[in-house]
Amino acid sequence: MTASIDSEIDRIDSLLPQTQCTQCGFTGCRPYAEAIVRDAAPINRCPPGGARGIARLAAALGREPLALDPTCGSEGPRMLARIVAADCIGCTKCIQACPVDAIIGVGKRMHTVLPSLCTGCELCVPPCPTDCILIEPASSLPPWSDADAQAARRRFEARRARLVREREDNDRRLAGKVADKLAHARAAVREHAGDDPDSIAARRRQAAIEAAMRRARERLAARGGGPGR
Ligand code: SF4
Ligand code: SF4
Ligand code: SF4
Picture (cartoon, rainbow, N blue to C red):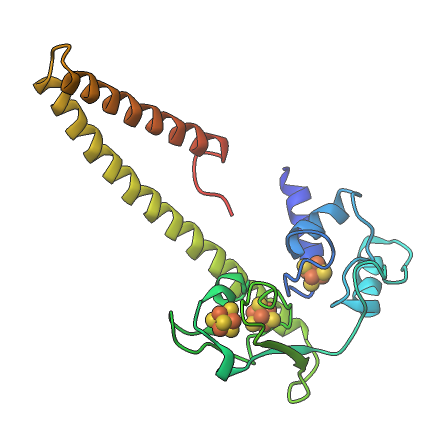
């Protein structure tokens, strides 16, 4: 991607509401911005941005405004998630789904939504096994603003960076364990150098571990040499 396309995508992304709700059909606001810049998507697919958002995109790109595509959803008031405490079993699935880290709680304990951080994206609702997350109008809060959008983007990016770090740490931990196993397997092969069942089993084990390491390296290479999003 060239620097100029990249900065154009940044410019269009900065006009989007940053709820990361995926209603546009993309995995988040920036992928939608990229599709708009590349003429792969029209400018009317963002319900949270609504008519005002479409007008801003049209002005920024020198295009005609369009009506919001109803297949993406409809424009509405700012919404908030609320967890019904009595029904929460503390499974943490909602925390894993929330793109902006707006839910707090630990395993097997009640979870809570932080209203000032919640974008109302609803992504926490489907994974909840007890259906105890309600999405309600945020009547106590002002309408979603540009400042809210930029803060949500910062939280989204911080979360993404944290997930990458956690995945890298996990990969390193696993790689260390596999290296230990391989060292033991090689020692066993040295110890059992004949054709008896123990020797054959030791060689098979070493070969299986080496094959697993090879597959892991190939998977890592396929996702660009390191953990992705
Ligand atoms: S806020 Fe708009 S652009 Fe961002 S993910 Fe949702 S629909 Fe797509
Ligand atoms: S708490 Fe739910 S609705 Fe609110 S931002 Fe997180 S995932 Fe979206
Ligand atoms: S997904 Fe539902 S049950 Fe699980 S912690 Fe979140 S609110 Fe509680």
